[in-house]
Image (cartoon, rainbow, N blue to C red):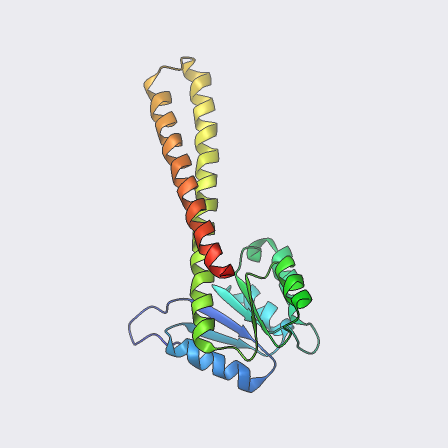
Length: 197
């Protein structure tokens, strides 16, 4: 199912996992209308299988389901290397502070209590997706910085002179990468602050 007009790319792929058909379909319809590609799962086991087959950009996960509940699904997602950074928003009827804290401590990106206002849900989805993009950029930048640091060390060993042109260029690029990393971390923190407001 896709809400993107013909020929346009959907905004993102969202997996909605809820055992209640009416709740699941209402969320799916609204997300579809908002331009997201939406997939559905009726239980935790099905959600994990779908994630394994084709990872979505974000998961909306009910907390109370028969069999594997939402918290167990979330823990499985967080302990699997390929999905450890996958944004997961819990959408559940459990509204006690202890339930919210337990889900966030287990790695939920956000937590919404049913009945959820669909406009708020879409805002939280977009914020979580933006935060995930920033985190992916930060990890890629860290990896580049690590490789550049190795190259700089090798260049120093080969050239043996700190004032050489390759070393100077590598140092400039490293300074630029560090500045970019700091900017991304600042932007990520600002987006994260909007999640807690």
